[in-house]
Length: 375
Image (cartoon, rainbow, N blue to C red; front, side):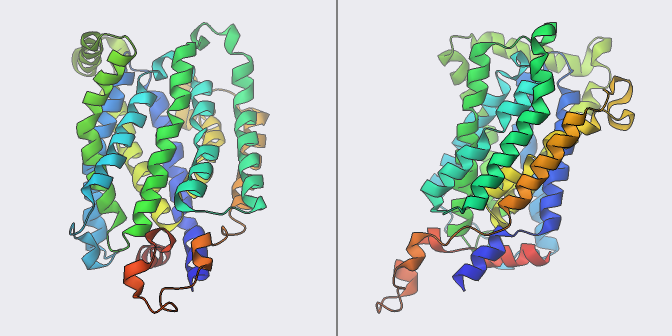
C-alpha cells in the first residue's frame, strides 16, 4: 500500500504538471517584460513577496469552495509555527538573494543559473526526505541540464560582444548561491506536506507566504548591510522605482500593467508549485519547470508575445526543448524507491501503536495526493 501511495504521489496529474509548466513559462515572459522598467529589480522582489499572500488566500478559498481538499484540512490546530517560520525565513532569504543581484546579470545567464536547483533539490531530498532515486532519475536530470545548456549557449557565447551583457562576478556568485535556500525551502515544504497530512498545503503555503512577506524587507536590509551597501541607498532605489510606476518618463509607460501581469502570473506559478510538491515531490517541480526555459525562448521569437522586439527563432531552442522534454519524461518513468524506513518492521508487528512510533517522513499524504489526482 505504501509503494502504491508513493507511486501515486510521484506520478502527479499530467494536467497539474502542464499547469505548472504553463504558469512557469508565462511568468518568465512577464518577468522579462517587467524587468525593462528602470530600477524595478529590488522593488519587484518586495512586491512579489507581498502579492503571494492574496493569491494564496484566493487559492485557499477556491479550494475550500470546490472541496478539493477535505473540510477538516483547513484547520490551523496543531500547526508547528516554528517550522513555518523557519521555512518562511528561508523563502525570504532566497527571494532577496534572487532580487538583489538580478539587475547586474544578463538574462541568459540568469536563466541558466536559476536552474541550479535541479541537482541541489535532488541531493537535499535524498538527505532530508529519504528519497532513493533510480538511475533513470539521474539520467533524466542530466538530460535536463544538458538541454538548459543548449538553450543558453547561443546567448552566452555572444555575451562578451554585447554592452548590456557584462556580468558582475559578485552578483553572479550571489545569484548562484540563491539556488541553495530555494531548494531547501521546497524540500522542507515537501517534508511538511507529508508529515502534516491533515493540513491543506495551500493553507500552509499561505501562512508561509505571509511570514516571508513580513520578513522580506528586514532580510533585504540586513543582507545589503552585510554586503557593504547602504540600506538608505537601497530604500532610495525602491522609491525611484515606485515613482516610475506613477509619474515616470516615457520609458515607464505601461509599467503598472506589466508589473501587475507579472505578480499575478508569479502567484499562480507558486500555487502550482505548492500543489505539485504536495501531490508529487520538490524534485518533480524543479525538473518539470525547466521545460518553460526553451518554451519561453520560442515564445519571445513570436510577435504575439514579444511584439516588435521578437527575436528570430533559433534551432538550438527547438533542440533544447526536445532534450528537456525527453529528460522530464525519463525522470518520471519510475517512482523513487521506498525509503529505508519502510523496510523496518511496522509498529503494529512490534505491538506498538502506529500513531506513537510511525515516522512522518515515511508517511505519504494520501488525502492530498488522492484529491489532487482526481481534481
